[in-house]
Image (cartoon, one colour):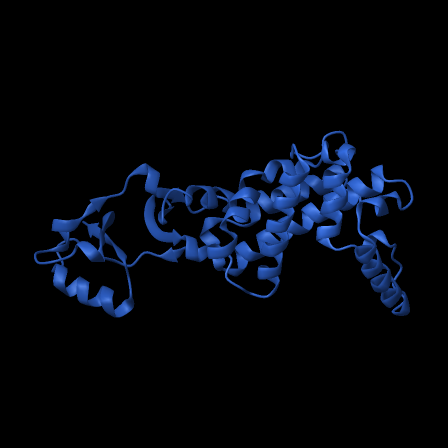
Length: 264
């Protein structure tokens, strides 16, 4: 499938703007800075809160951590917000992913004042999972495009084992019985397509990967991520590297391989 320039612009808008921090952040529970620390500590234990915000004269001025609280008032333990800890609520998902590489959590600024909090665990939420699944799907479409443009007929078969080709042929027969108009290439799995691109030198040169091993390793990570997304499994503990890679390389995924960019 070839993507037109207008389609790419739409995709860029969706992947860069449609999913933002606001969609996954939690409200930051807050207290007046003069509140007794023990009262807040008791409530934080009850609600399993590790961090809460502190207000001075009605405005959020800092935060406290549960592990630090003892006697006195909350003001005694207040830590100020610093720029490195704060992200705008309109920031796109890729930015929050990359910012969370360095920190466990970020505070979210809403209308010029901290009002929320976001952590890695929030990346498990549906908006992020939708964003990630869409990115992996787009990469698979790029593989399709490369193979269609650069492999005559079914010359790509030489890069797959007989067993993988047989699997695709069986799937094609099943889909034909359901009156679906598809080609054999349409019945390849994600890993098959990645293997073809990795092993065909000219195809691989159109990607950002310098070696076959690099591309195959990345493809395995992406396939594992997609499987975990499809089955609602944890993606932070097992797929963090893949999530960061997608966020870092968003532009190259959207733009497509050099020399094969869409035309108007």
